[in-house]
Image 1 (cartoon, helix red, strand yellow):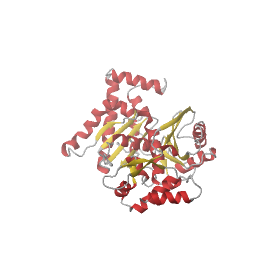
Image 2 (cartoon, helix red, strand yellow):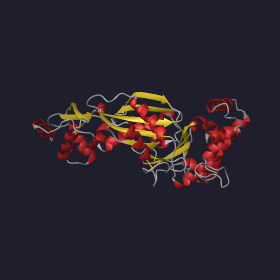
Image 3 (cartoon, one colour):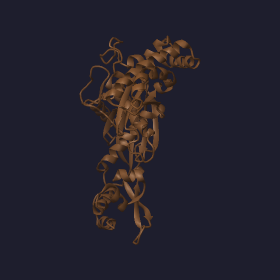
Image 4 (tube, one colour):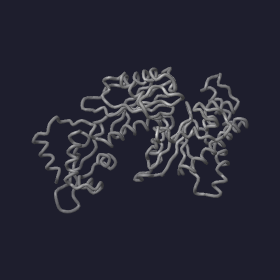
Length: 400
């Protein structure tokens, strides 16, 4: 019911009952509960279509809940707050020396410092959630460090919570690729379309190569939180060794370092300077750089062939540097997909660049925090400690 009010604006109790299929008495009681929690309020009235008194409208109170989203990436941590409507508020960005794949204690220190630098919520504002979007695979479990790049979500959440004893809300840790995928999926949506694009795949390359799958608007986690890691689809049986332990993974062909090496650009000048030089060469149509991106596109196309046979996505959204490189990747992708497109013209996904850029993961973490409240409004405490006669009268009047 809270989700319906949030999505459709101020509405009457009768409209809510018709939309979600509950009897009017149940809707009245639940609306009263949401009012007591400060999540909705009466915001006016509307004239009834037929005879009878005007219908009172209830609307969302966005400022009642505040969520905090954090993106922990290479050399910086960014934190931003948002209300229940998703409107962003305070932002804090701090440079760090941590490695998102390295020591968990140092990573937790950097995240906690950034969050602590944001002002506490004002009186009457409930701190709903802290959602941390982290570069690299994030897996379920509370254990310590795992071999390889995977990060146990619950373990890092516990470390951060211990450093923020006054936080007063649960801490969630998610893959930044999955968070970005959720945000880009919603950016693809059209108003009024609940499932705009069926299955969507997301793939990004920045600090590393990572991906996600969304089915019906929901991120597919898999058994261990590793579903959708498209960067680890093998595209060659005897290719380079990947840090995941396999060989010939897509990430060894389209990762930043791999592409720079293929283009003959040294990283000794610094990664940023090397990427700037790569961009210059691409825009100048230098054959060696263009050929390097086409080879990377060929590897990407091979991975998409495997993906279409398993997940059958309608869209593949490319984020990070892949979005910038798409014009030079596309010839290789199209060449690899062309034979299957000839046989199954409607079976091939649309490959598009993401629209949210470097902020996609933060947007997705904010969405995830908001979803937690919409899914379980009972986590927000009631504003009134007890229910006096006025509250009872209000509930009785609501039934009308």
